[in-house]
Image (cartoon, rainbow, N blue to C red):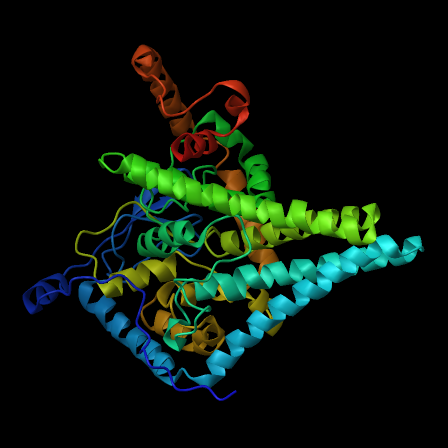
Length: 475
């Protein structure tokens, strides 16, 4: 089918920032912002050079910045070059891009149908070897389908990368993916908060997901000793963490709003409705259909295949996301500059992200988030173009002396796990700070009552606090 050219021009998804006046630009262009650096490996802090392009040493692990590393003049020049790259790609979008995402959508659908057919057929096979081989093939194909649905299709479509097509289904307003998190909740916590306030402690809630300590800017608590164990749980159930992530964020964000209960009730009900649909499909309806049509063994193979595929998809998604954000050289920011320009925003995205090297299919299965740097500076650009523009972006980074962090998957994953392990242990100063905070807390313990909204009666007391909170609001 021949596709018409796009009717709606593609628009940038980066935040709209107030441009500087000529006077401000001239004045700030003379200043060198000296970044404060945190070398968590040595448990001390040093001050950056007066050179405006001075960054934490590439040998410094887990760098932290308190201010922009470039002058306004430099960051705006960098921004102009990146804007040109962006415009060239977005102006070229057309039928090839539309056909690509439609092929991805078809691949997801057909591979899922084939996988579920194979899983159901297992119960009708007499040979044990055939059963195992068919189950492995069906589960692998279903895992592939769910990963492709989650990464290259769902993530990118819900970022608005294909809204210019005006497709009735493949657009950010209507598409929903095959996980328990509703699209609107994810778009609030991810598209808006994470991509706007990337790697700013206290503003970007993806920094540790309220569960894992990944920077010394997060105060150490005894639970951090189990960082690696918590990470394993997060990875296995990553879709559940993503699902409840926005509940935790929104409860704090709207805490002072008179519409708090209405907002949270709407979000919580939408969440539990989506959980019901996903759980019902994978763990009740499809196994039941298999049992009725093909027998009990087909129900077991269908159910076990669905559970395994969901876990595989969760592990893969977690690994790709964490390798894109928490390698050794992923910079953490302590605050948001009040006069941050679009160029400054670009710099923060570049320094806070990491790429992963790989081949064509590797990039597709990551949703091209293996080009996390390009995704963070151009979140609404169709991701299939990231590999092509990556050398141009890297050249711009080299020109302005900005680190362009990339490496093999094994290297990036090893750094992520090393970072998580490193911040599970407190330095001497952090231990003393914790002891002092405990002393202060003990003195004020009687005034620290739990919120009434969290019902801890019955079985609910065994649920995580954020789940109890969502249940309370959903009533």
